Length: 203
Image 1 (cartoon, rainbow, N blue to C red):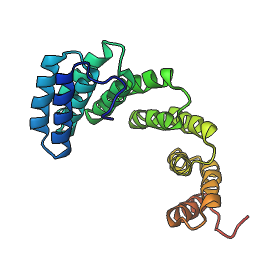
Image 2 (cartoon, rainbow, N blue to C red):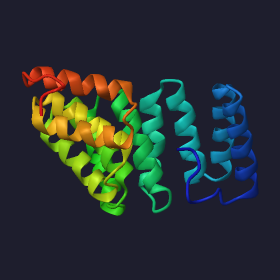
Image 3 (spheres, helix red, strand yellow):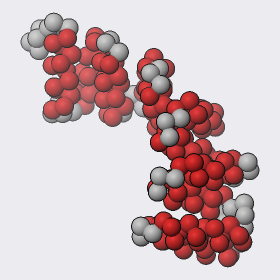
């Protein structure tokens, strides 16, 4: 996420931040970072500038420096949600899954009713091998949006990975009820049936 809730507080900071954003969008992150640094000279605590500098750094693979930017935001009151989300993304890239999970939990403590955030929380859990907790994230997301297509697909594959074949089949059937022509899900259903020792013609 680039835009955040709190805009730069000085005109000089805003102009330099906008210039940095334009340079980053043009594929010139090094030049963008110089603009962000100049902007932070005018307004050292600007959450927008710190966030967008972090995004540019992360885009270059400089995730630890990006995290340092997000941490500065988290010391204040503004822009915390996007800083937590961006920090979680960088932590995932660094393989720091427990720390990324803490960030995701911090977001959900503020916005508990966003299905996409529950799915985002499942990602570090999957990397940690905590499949049961990841499944709970899918269930919570489906409580909020019962027929969300991609969530049902993800849950189907997760249940298959957990070898819970009957549940995986039921979830797969829900997907195919929405879109019977989904070839990948038809193939998945046949795979599950084979694992259950049943053919697609069996009841």
